[in-house]
Length: 319
Ligand SMILES: [Mn+2]
Image (cartoon, rainbow, N blue to C red):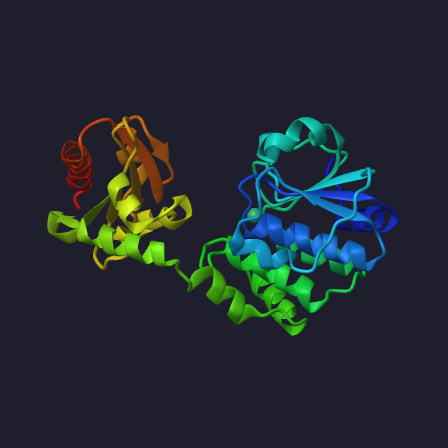
């Protein structure tokens, strides 16, 4: 049984001593939701607390600036942007049985809670929190507007993905009107790279090989490169999108060394190429646009095998 936004608003306005939970490996959306909701509830004079199985990374720390949480025994538990119980991580055992309200935008949501509100048309859960705060007649301060804008911007890749709707822009416009620092948040999330990241990119471009007249581009990432660049996992994140950015490339291939297990292959494709079908040759899978598989071989052999599979797919489809 799904709740209405009006029901959620009514409960939250009545409740006190509320614990808000984000999903593990937290992103801008789940943290933006949690911070915005906590700030709004505090504004309404309530005691609130926030918890997440993993720490808030420096990238998102600004969302929680100035927030302090008192110690108390929660009476009500709310999850935001959490699509499945396991995504509560180490908090699942203690808190999942007590989740009373679940607010999310994943069509696959499998959380059980007395009050569930899942809107899969929302590009970000922060869109739902915005509508909820309006329904609650809670004051949306510039700080809250920043948190919500950050969530919407993160989950839409800076308003670039297919999930963006007219409503996404309307909400973003309202948030900017309420004082959100749109340009600054977008620069922080999408136009800022760590030095280690730049060092990684330099090295990754050096490994670039073109195949099939430039329709396939292949790069590789080794542990040695990561060590030389001083890069952590965060700094290597998303590098798989680089080869597909090259004009004319239909399939971008990234080989990432996995100590002792050969290479993890990330495939990024542009229609009509189906990356999942190519990955399936090696027992992998994913979506048409992004897929992955593993090949346990040396770098040279792994590259040769995946490129051969790409070549066969292109040939079979007359490309
Ligand atoms: Mn989300």
